[in-house]
View 1: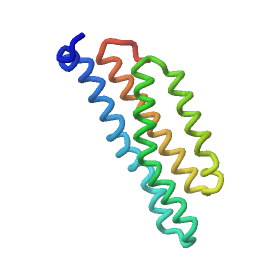
View 2 (view 1 turned 120 degrees about the horizontal axis):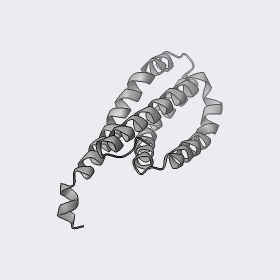
View 3 (view 1 turned 90 degrees about the vertical axis):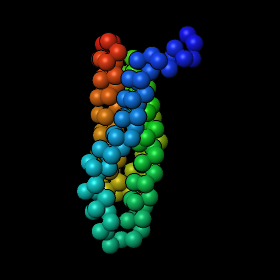
View 4 (view 1 turned 90 degrees about the horizontal axis):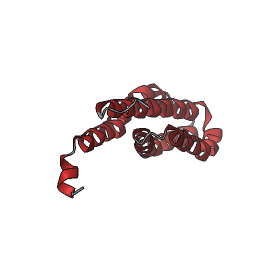
Length: 136
């Protein structure tokens, strides 16, 4: 297939649009869902705990973009089992930080991850249905 045919293919538009919505709008949803945790952290009197938690949250922004993009890519390709493995790898990689971060870091991590997974899953299903494929 030639490059100009690929650019005119409706499936490319569907996948690109849904991917962008997943990554960036999903990030806005995750920020909204986790906002109350950030407010509680900013009010902490322990400066070390506050600094650690806010640093963790800031790094979570970029990780969330990557997470939603990878999950969406696996779901759109019909490999939901690979999406589960990617999610498990992320959880294992961040476990040491969760152990020393306290309840705020854990709550932020869980809420953010569940929101990212839900967003990627929803948009993956929408994209697959828009292209006439089975939902998963």
